[in-house]
Amino acid sequence: MWWLVIFFGGLTWLLVRIGFPGRKRETMRGVAKGARMFVCGSLATATGLLTVGGIGASLSPQTTGATSATPNAAAKPAQFLSPAVARGKRYALNVTANLGASIAVLDANGQKVASNSSQLSAALPRGTYFVKVGLNTYKPFKRRVSIPENKNLRVTLEQDLRVLSISLPVKTGIIVYDQSGVQVAKTFASRANFKLVAGHYTVALARDGYVAKTVSANAGTRVNTALQRVPPPPPPPLLAAEARDPEPSARVVDRGGVCGNYGSWSEAQAAFLAYGYSRMDRDKDGVACESLR
Image (cartoon, rainbow, N blue to C red):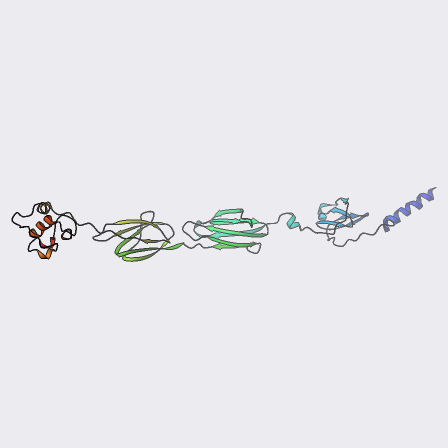
């Protein structure tokens, strides 16, 4: 019987070496050098995840040792997953801005993924992002960047300058103050254009013979306004009494409602009071023909 043991032992060894009859020999195309896998009793090497001839295997680098294989219900084509993607590889993005401006990085959906002031260093996955830099009274900055192509970005913000226009009917002294009360512009003109940093300002207007005025305006707007004349002073009390009681010697003579027709102011005033010629009192102060006084 010992010869039967030797015969079947040798047959088994031969079948293991050449493969079992009826089973198609598996190809090892696509298996990378440096990793290991058992297929039909043979050892193969690869890196990454690989499916070959209906046998699924989780592969690892050679330094990790042998891996296990489990059968799949349906065969799938060979596919390779980059270790860099599997580990979520990230790339550096460095942004520097002047004046301590705020920096924000947004993803393609507009979600903020990183932020800082003055300087920002972020590790981001490959993709498209938007860099926004802002500072009060400065023009906002926004740029689209691609990672990893764009690694370093230096931003220099510029002041947001706007024109404040002022228009008046006559030449007027114009002084412009900022929100802190500091004078930032001054001129004497009927029309003026001031190039100012974006913000709120107070404009003081003054001219002899006119009532002073102040207006508020934002840079980038137009102001159209006018000043009112200072009203004439009221007549002295003596003139007011004379208007009420003209000289007794003045005779009431009707020469019409024209001041030039009268020889004296008293005569004109008496006619005004007697006949009520309104055009003899142009400023409506109760005193007629003041030019005759």
